[in-house]
Every structure is written in structure tokens, then in C-alpha cells.
Length: 222
Image (cartoon, rainbow, N blue to C red; front, side, top):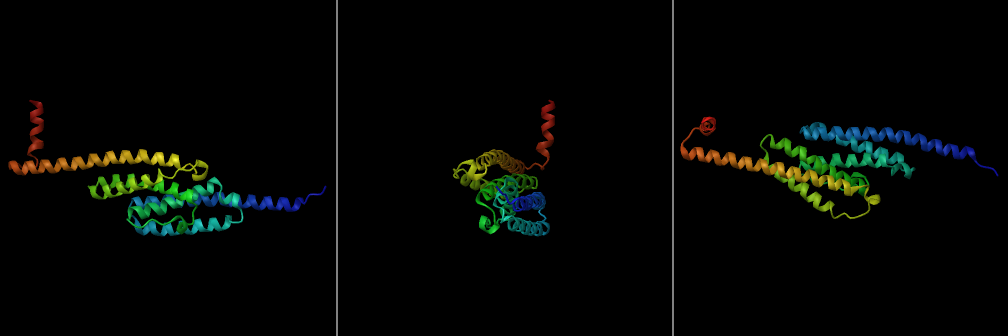
């Protein structure tokens, strides 16, 4: 029996070399995505947009390199990188009120896109809380509606985890984030309403704005 060892070893060497490149490229792609999302949260659009463009080019380059090797293209680390790319692109679109790019437009698989969408929705929590600190309640309510709409869609995607890459767990995590954010936003709205009611009461009583606050400690001490 004769075996073409040279051909076999050459093919394995090529796969191994490509895998090493893919691992490095996937790590770099994830790092670029994290930097893009960080720039989005800081409202640094002049930074976020070029970073996203670089990320898109890196994702396309990775896909083209791995096209001859389906096992590497659909490996967990590769799909995780594509998921992070989808998350970065979708987060930017959500906070800017733009139409969401499709998974075909991004060049990622459906499962990676859906998991990226769930994580992008979770990223809105940080954006909402940052806005609340600056009194942006209305924009927070709009973003919460976006989170709710995304969650309502994701819970209808009923396929085995082997097909969706664990989307059910990601969706459950989004539900917890959504409910915490709803509670925080509700508290902020009620506080805003209370402040407005106190202001109206002070105006009605003809008191200076600080009068009620100044009287409270005296009453407590007594």
C-alpha cells in the first residue's frame, strides 16, 4: 500500500498555517470592534466611522482568506469575530437612528448577525444611562423601545442552539438587561416628574426655589 504522504502533509500544513493567521486576524477584528463601540459610546463619530470601515475591510479580508477552508470559516473563533463586527455595525446604526444593515450587507452568517443584534441591543443600556446623566430622558425612552422591539423579535427565533450558536442564552441575557434598563429609566422619569411638580408648587406658593429644601432639615431636627 502506498500513501501520497507529501500531498497529505502539504494540505495539513496549509490548513495549519491558515488557521494561525485566522486566529490572529479574528483577535485583531474583535479588538477593532471593541474600539468602534467605545467610540460610539463617547459620541466620537469621526473616530467610530473610520474604525467601522476598517473593521468591515478586515472582516471581508478574513472571509476571503478562509473561503477555501470551510472548517476554519465556520469555526467558533471566526464566527465570534463576525458576531462582534455585526454588533459594532448595529450599535452604531441604532444609536444614530439609522436603518439596520442586513446580514448580507455585512457579509456575516445569520446566527452571527442575530447574536450581534442581541448584544448591540444590550449595549444601548450604557448609552441610555449615559444620556440620563445628562437629562436625556426622551432619547432614552426611544432607545428602550428599540431594545424592546429587538427582544420581541429575537424570542420568536426558535431553533436549536446548534443552528443559532446559542442565541437563546444571548436573548435571555438581553431580557435581564432590558428589564434593569426599564426600571432605571422609569425611576428617572418619575424623578423628573417629581422635580417638575415641586417647581410648580414652589411657584404657586411664591417661594424661592431652595425654600422647600432649606425647610426640610429644620423640620427633621424638630
